[in-house]
Image (cartoon, rainbow, N blue to C red; front, side, top):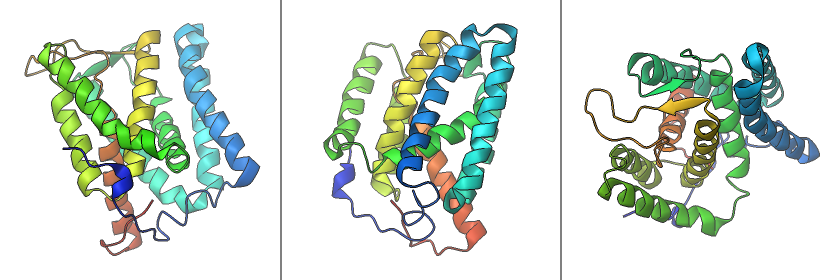
Length: 246
């Protein structure tokens, strides 16, 4: 059974909770949130319909914005760098090696690695801003949707991804962030697949399971990304494992 994010106590430490929003604060923070959100949404449009220069220009802009966040948001710098490294490795494995999904030009677009960082940073900023009730309902809505798709044999990848999501909610240190990332990544997946920037395979390579385009629970990958980023940062910074964050 999914655990409501609001029911789990969360303790902040300087490695995360005290850091979020300190590097980019006030009006600058709100402006940065809007800029990052528009970059993700409109960048996919430019990549899809911008012709031969669309993808290179989006890549340059995404890397520039990512670099700006790394420069200005020093408290989160280590976490964002960890996200960049882990997400890039994940893209290579899931797309280029396993073939779980394909990008429009058959490549790994250069804007994708910084794009993961931008979406992750956006989730970090919005986790405390989204309504608590919405975040509490997210796992229940995901359970209902994934179950319906699995029973109708439309998506069998959803249940294992949903299980990952629920495990992160139950055992991970940041349930509000996980629900936030689940919603943000679902919105991005729906937008990107509708535009045609990437397409999920209709059957799971190696197993032949039916897969939706996109899977409803694809946001579970971002939950795992956060957990791995947390572990990597703690090892690098020498933070004791009992600490948690927002």
